[in-house]
Length: 554
Image 1 (tube, helix red, strand yellow):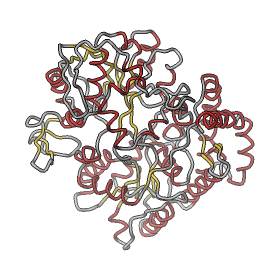
Image 2 (spheres, helix red, strand yellow):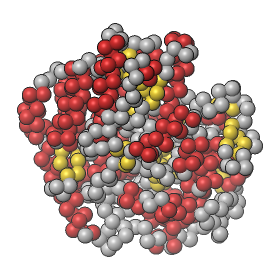
Image 3 (cartoon, helix red, strand yellow):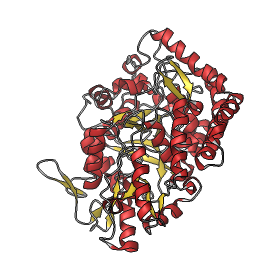
Image 4 (cartoon, helix red, strand yellow):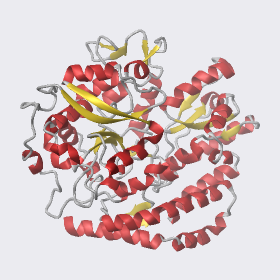
């Protein structure tokens, strides 16, 4: 994740879409099990080149050479190469050649929408975050993939063994069907938190903080000894920090990084309440305002660019900064040059706990694949679904997409430990390697390599990150999943019109409260202002959808 729907960041452009899958975690049909009965799959006759004996944990190879069109999000850090070993090996192993439509990552969502709307979309549409498919459901442009789960034994096996049904149900539309195949993780995968100067804590015998209160306390004490240093001078415009704080306070925030539905589930009233004016939200805002007032949180965190924040931290002018596993490596590399090796120690702290507990936000689902509805008319439709199931959902396919070819890009010991060959590196895993696994070979890229077992995920982590993941798993639990409240098409249109201006206003005023440009004594006035922008109407839509779901499903 990215950041995961999951624990990774949610871009501004997909925040509205996520409203439709998270707030509108859709219902099963009143008859019982939505569209997962497999009747549609059993009626499919276009089985040319498909394997008759395809099953979970078996390799896939089409009976004859096939070409499938596929959209590709081109990452600037490892741009597409037609001669990648990844693509050559896919063809060698499966008899499938992918006819790629290459789109720059920066334009991917817009270009994908244009291709789908015009009817020119490739059959396979990867790198689709759950919620983005909702815009194409009513037109019939994308396939109700849940009708064809029976063609995907590896997908079904993981859903069953990892007990992912509840999370999978959050993807259902109001007709009970699912229109995106998500990436599946065995366990939830946290990543974003704070990097902190542990050497400065050690000067005073201070322990690493585990709560927001402790974070403020230790930074304050370090600043007493180092008064010229800033405390938390954050990157990401503070949005990751807001998202983390919101989860631990039982609410939503972080704008496009986390405020997807603007709704909290209230157990007492058994209804959704508006997060931007809730007691939980006010408590979170008050806590962060206190950090600013104490000089612990730099108010520039919400306006400065990332380079400024990173330079402040890596030159020793701040004590903490937002991070994830990727940046954890780059901070240390830079600081060895600016501060000198041995003159600092940086540590990725656990995500701070709050009143709601030590919680991890998100789900075990990741970005995945839409399939053009044209695919069902292709004579090789079943073979295509088998191919997708093998490459994106089988253990063999997932290991291949991440690590590459055994004996060529990596080796595996008798105990299953994988190591990159001497001249290949990936994210600091083998620093001596002068060839990047992604750049030179195409493996471990964001289009094909996501999801999988925890063992596979951990296999590509540095020891430091692996220790952090294990400690998070031992100390934190997944935030409860909100109950389903599927929106029908009319409700979806109404809700979409309301949520964007509400989110914009809540974030605007939130930053004013936190940075001191608005007095917290004006909170009640702010609540009234939000009400005037349609809070009641929006919550009525969500709760009506929830009531319909309960009525239909018990």
